[in-house]
Length: 494
Image 1 (spheres, rainbow, N blue to C red):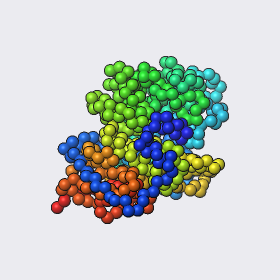
Image 2: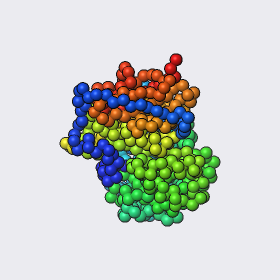
Image 3: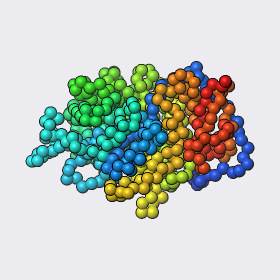
Image 4: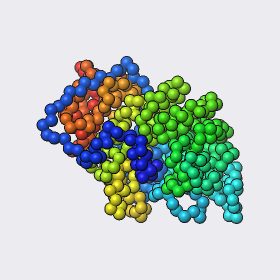
């Protein structure tokens, strides 16, 4: 999940082939006087489907950094994402860190060294010393920065949804002795027979965090992007490969560990990087493993076979989340104000909602490290940019990007409880309020001509726009400017 590795993956998988010309041609500006194009928006309200639960972010790694910043700064960030005047997010994914040996020379990227909750007693050696039933081997003071965010979200959201997830087992449970992966990227890194011990580690962490912070983790995801070749010992972030068979064993062990503690937390899986690998994993799970899953998670770093994942979730009658994505336009240099990446991102969100029809859409890293240090061109990961490597006591410059406002076009208006509705226009996603009296249509105009958006008969309302000049601002009429994201908030006429 580093910027570099993610960017390489985006390039390899060509996630944004339709938009690739933007990167090659440089910034695109609409020409004045282009005639408008009429787009008739025809949502099928009779087919309102998924009840949407909300939007959110993974807390690792940015929370591991910003949770230790001065109160004014970290509260400002929390307000930007979870406050009533911000994005209105309601979901957070908390990363239970694995943690490397105490004497390991730091090698993980800034923010990625999320502390584990284990403690190694003095005098112990090797890898078989840890005992989950011995209180002396737990450290509940760990990970204070990320945990600050749990309290901050709880204070801002009336009914937050928390999910815990793991990127890697602790170092002493791994084959390589490192939380970044096995020596060979396609080898499983959990030592054979360690499933129950690792599951006990995760379940106890969930139990203690719930009690200490007065929250509920609805789900726990024990593996992350498991059946990939991303994770290897020389990597700069936590990660672990899991074959489908080892995934299934870990799912069953996690379910058993949660139940042994009397927890209502359900297992979520497989948090695969894209839909076609998700389907490969799912096809290999035995019935018992499938039955132990309470929520299906998929990432959308790739858009092939998304409707197949939708169908698998429906056939199994299991809730589906799009649990991780960020979409910077490939090779687009870091730019807080430019619209190329925000438009690509918004197109991706629209297609995810239309094809996966998920119950939630969760961003990867809400705050990303400034990537233009030392003269580099950088990239447009994240919604907000800040310098992770500056002294914790600050002050820290917080840069809100245009992509933040692209997200606002969705999350401020498609709210928890709304139902996704099919729309026949490729660039438009729709959602209907629980009472059926508000229809939200989010349209992405990546072209050079204005688009006159014609709502369905019997509906009227207002339009909010983000483009090169506006940041989630109302605009009279229903004509979406060129290179813009437009949200129509409609009510029955009369």
